[in-house]
Image 1 (cartoon, rainbow, N blue to C red):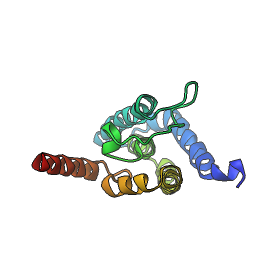
Image 2 (cartoon, rainbow, N blue to C red):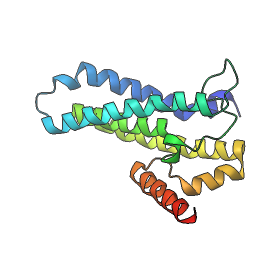
Image 3 (cartoon, helix red, strand yellow):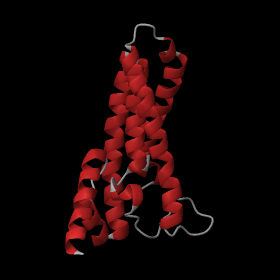
Length: 171
């Protein structure tokens, strides 16, 4: 498959995502008709998404056995600890939350529709990423998929606590 076809979804949602950010900062902040509490919630979600987006860079570099001089995405070992013990795709989850937060901040129909499209395309990309990781890591990743949800943070925390509880009982 051609290189551009593999990343077509990323190109589309990436372009929409950047457009969404630009529109929010040009028009969204001056929207006087918005509900202020939703805007504040959007800002909190935005900050959470920023942290969620950056943490994996350091975690994968440190624990993923990335070859020297390569990007954090070139892991050679699966990382199942830290944030990756809670959700499998923290950066996609961050993107989804970031896009949603932009809607909450701006509260405009255009940003709302863009958020909807970006979130759908990112989720589709998550499914493709899982397929790629199964090809890369095989059965180990399939087992990991059973333990850790794609992007449901709350379910991931519950499952992590359950795994730790079972481990305490066994020990």
